[in-house]
Image 1 (cartoon, one colour):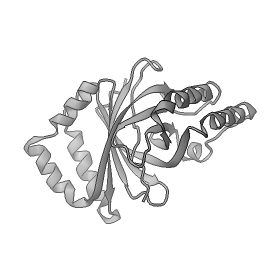
Image 2 (cartoon, one colour):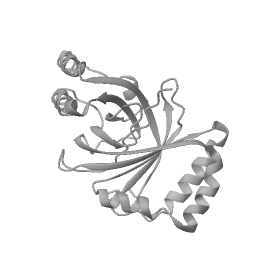
Image 3 (cartoon, helix red, strand yellow):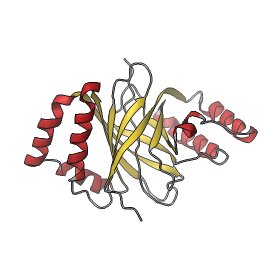
Image 4 (cartoon, one colour):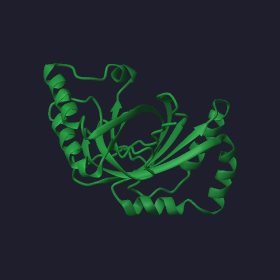
Length: 234
């Protein structure tokens, strides 16, 4: 059964391509009858966590997905500092953490995790609560060419929210190692995604022509935010 388990969930404000962003995702499968109690438990725990100042987390549901994708929730941690992200992960120990796991574990039927980094970022100030992932299998030698094609596409295509390209470095499943992630202001924006004029149609055609021989699109899925943690509103 094919499952793509990755996403990028990023809340930040940086200059395009000024630095890499590091992400760590935990994706979980929860039965529908346990959803409310599970979400309450997760929210209460992470609302009390002492995050490093440059690490954020987004807790989301995964309501839109393809056949065979059974995960229902995702916890996405992100930081411009790999050290800060690693320190947060290492800090999740001790009695409080074990008590949280004891409560939340019975709700979880399956769990996976992955990590990676993103450096091609567009519209960082338009990070909305609905996010979509497009996952690809790309051979390592072809990643630069795929990235260049994506960059060329974004010279013309006006995406209405945040969009970025990331590489999975840990937790690769079924070969999916490149992700394109975009966010939408609302469901209508998500439903009407796509090229809006001839120039954008041509840009998409060029992108597909340049990547069809080097990349295999595997699947797409969409998350909806429940809550953010350690986010500073200016």
